[in-house]
Length: 361
Image (cartoon, rainbow, N blue to C red; front, side):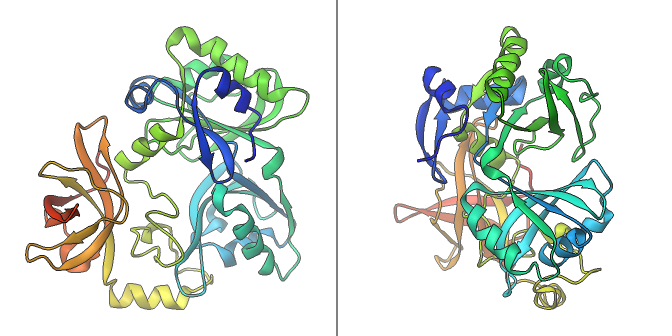
């Protein structure tokens, strides 16, 4: 297993550790429910240094990004970020990612899922036919997500730029906790507000930043948070997890990601997805909440009132903020409307649920 520069910190703090995407990662510290509530109500720190980062530069950088991603990166100005995906040749999803525009037309950072770093690098490299300059900086890039309504207030004294007024999906670069060239973005995977900070771990920068954050935030209730609460937080917002809710077999239109699929430009599988949009999808990713007692789990079957299989669960949990069990799953389109009654097959028993609008929280 690989370690992040913060692995020893997690172990010293008593985190429950486990393998995730080839890394030794903290799953929980004080317990998922407590950590979840900390982020929703105050602020918490996630080590997500296992994520992948690619730099794409040069006169052909934007052209390459436009061809391989579904969203329109030409709209980005310096300091803006954009959620997007990499469609495959069949209209499925190679990965979802965030595109950061550092210099329009010339310099971009792509942030990809940890489990897909090698896959994505090969996918994009194989399509880099015009010679854009590419650098995989994943191994030397640290990433901390400080999430929650009080996150930016806690961090502002450490930053030499205004981070309290950063608009959603914008970023700034500057000095943070005495470390130069730190990228701070108003992005995250919790729906609770906050920022993500990217920096290179040289000359002890990782320990310096971690210690400074907790020195500033500890007295204000800031806590370290594991991947367990990260999952419950993202699920309450209806955010997709690659490998669960979206993958190579699901199209962005089926996954509710039509809003990041822009047909005003050419990109991989554009014709397939355009035809799918015109004809309408046959299944769709929906959110649902349990009406009867039971917790939905990944791959549980979804049935209609007559017992016919109409889909399957992709993610599910007992939502800490809501006090009810919720899930995401694909269902045939005739059952995808809000308030549709569906049944989750839990241990061969049909348990009643209903489709609801996202986000849950």
